[in-house]
Image (cartoon, rainbow, N blue to C red; front, side, top):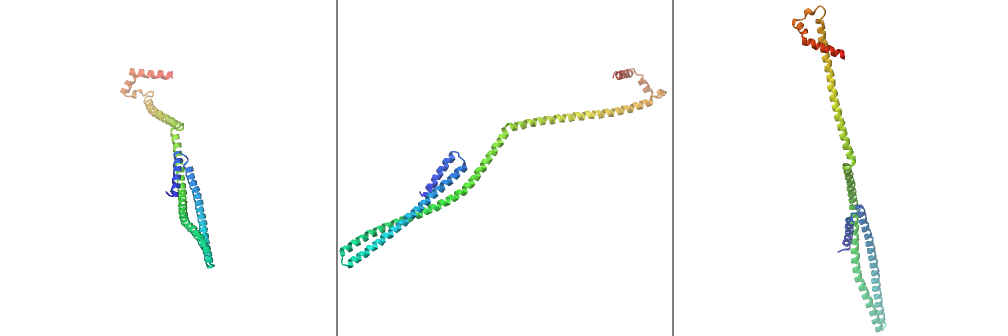
Length: 252
């Protein structure tokens, strides 16, 4: 498993742990990005260290090869002077430095691969961080929206079940009761008014009949009444009813 995969696995583990503890999503995301930034800093330091080691190995390999070339020249010089033993010693030294240079070259090849891999990992992590920042902003916005919606729903829930709504319901019943009483009074008032108008109309009719009756029963004109009317005036029942009306009038 590559370095980036291990880093991301650790981040995901930490993130899952934080989510499991029901912490603030915004803080979780901020901390995750911060952890990735710290990992990127360490990775850059590792890349810089690997490059520095590579440069040092290159200098050491170049120096070893240069020293090997010098001992070869010395061997040639000793041999030209007829000192074969000294030439042999110089060639032995040359071989030692050549082996050192060879080892250094092998290390350089390995170090170059390490540097290349570290650089690739660094670029990949930088891309992941950029993507994480974008997602972080999106998730934070979504989390804030969800929290706001949750608070609104809680507020609506409290209003719906709290004493405030009960007070409104009670007031609604009171208003409905007042409206019913008002309608009843309006109906009663309307009936009474109609009765008064009816009484006035009836009074007008009676006054008209009384006026007509007076016109017919004037002094000296009683004989002009029809026989039926004269007989009805003398009817005992009518006379008793008239007497009762006179008594009621006198008492009032």
